Image 1: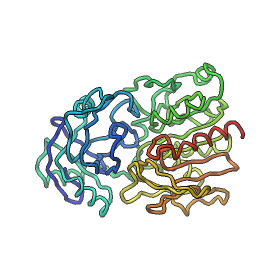
Image 2: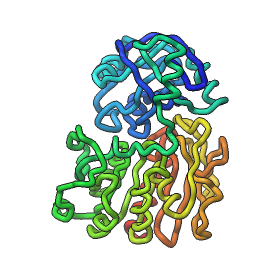
Image 3: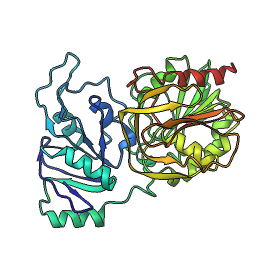
Length: 380
């Protein structure tokens, strides 16, 4: 493994030969590696786990958060090759191999994490093919793009709109912005009755869809670049802005769409969706030094005074002092570094959080956010 600051560490592959490049980040979760691997917000990143033993409970086909492995590469201290869990349907190495992803073990993940905390998240390459340290560092600096200014949403959004039925969505081997969507949205919309919401897919995690469905909502997932006019023409009961990867400021088409939709329907933003809402309200975003990634992030709800233990995965944040509208309320604050974790605009019926309320580290600390969205839809 080589980082752009010149650090090179040796390990061994537990998935066979390969190479991967991206931004190297760390996650402090003790469990949930399959959810991490399949979270589209990790596109473009190589993830290092701080917990030393990974793979001991295997993998299954129920805990995935998307249609496939999204991380570019995976680094662990020690890989456990013989899983023992009643839910296991396979082992982690085979799972990564099938996805064509490189997994390394035997590296000093503590040293990597401490380096990233001091220097910040860095570009890197992991490889079993190029073993020349100096050349590998040079390649990192010359070949791996910076995350700032990078729009990765086209790599993870759905290609065609679909109704969420609790199953994997239609396969989308040619994922892209979906600008040439041929589906008749109006005809698709008429297929369902009841309370119906539009979810703008910037890289949605399946559990967000499950949480909305569990509250009786019919959820139509649409590609990231679906025009605001097309969304509003359907007259949905609400709009959800999903999580996703990359620099929010680079997703200009989504910012414009969110701005046009604000105030027309109840709106709920999550993670990247929160950042896009902040930008649409006139705010700014900035890159965090090493981000928030883990299942133990303390967040204070300023409206209730309660502290929530949250699951997070983001490298950018909304500047807490940048939103000019005095009607915007800053609702949640990260207790580790004081950054903004939530906002709302009561007059526009819009709110958002930076963390992942569909995850369960609390385990139910953030469930109320989906209920709050339902109250807005019901007009309560």
